[in-house]
Length: 161
Image (cartoon, rainbow, N blue to C red; front, side, top):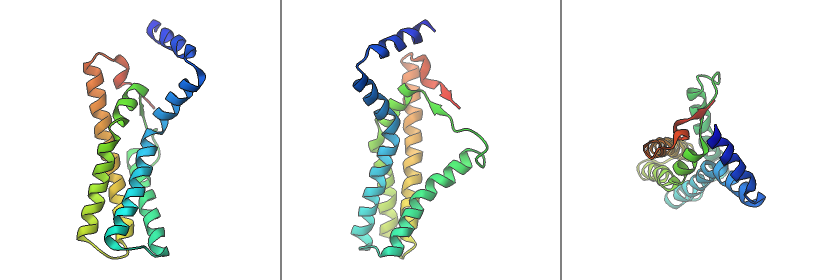
């Protein structure tokens, strides 16, 4: 507990803007990576499948959103359980590897666009890319937790409901 109090006191001494920047960056890293992923996946589809029409753009948005909906439904056991969150130190290290999760999602989308065609590709590619992104992001978080635990950080494996 004493370590937490000291850390909290040190944080209060940090300039407000720097403290806010640390909070915002840590909180938004996964969202930032996902927004990059859906943007580049759209570009990949457009480059390989051609310019989309209006219904294909709606399919694209639907596929992107459904990835989170399906995983949240499964992982929360039908939206009946809380979704745990790692400590911020683990989140910071894990999300610093977002490049790999974005590239994994792009790779899945590219493979699909090279193998399949048709209007439904505009829904399937972003769905699969987002699922790959989230799976890789989970691997990055697990790796971050293991690295930090091995380095002696007691908070690294803590999750909040």
